[in-house]
Length: 170
Image (cartoon, rainbow, N blue to C red; front, side):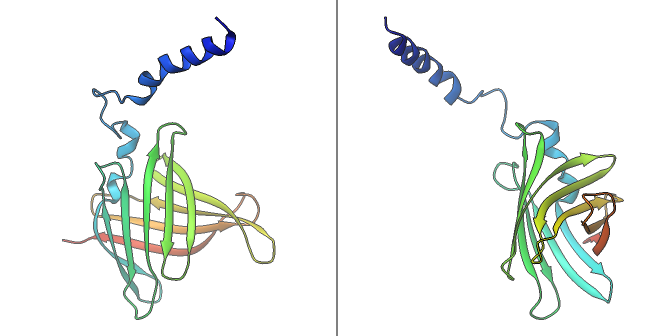
């Protein structure tokens, strides 16, 4: 048997094992896939200068996705959404954000020390590299604080750009 035929035979024998899901392991069943569950629910938001908004967080698609629907309540303001999933291969959370101002951002991160931190690298229009991150902290059953931060020194220091206080709707 030629080496090529042997390789094809080996590949054909492994296809069924690779393509079949293990029926005893439900999708998204890793314990890490529940790390963002604190965020699921209906939220009232407040921030500096009397800012107010809402955020509706659901867990659709077989509870494998965290879906966010954000709305600033001021007229003609920011409306956005995100989808987040836990990737068991990389052992990281991944989030995609889009909004009505043309924003499109990709984040990765994880949950540690009572905080969910998702970050990304980007470049300012002047060419300056910048790190951006979202920090979910002081998490309780009915509230949390979300910080939007930036660093221009590769994470040595962080500047707060926006802080939102979340209160669960009753």
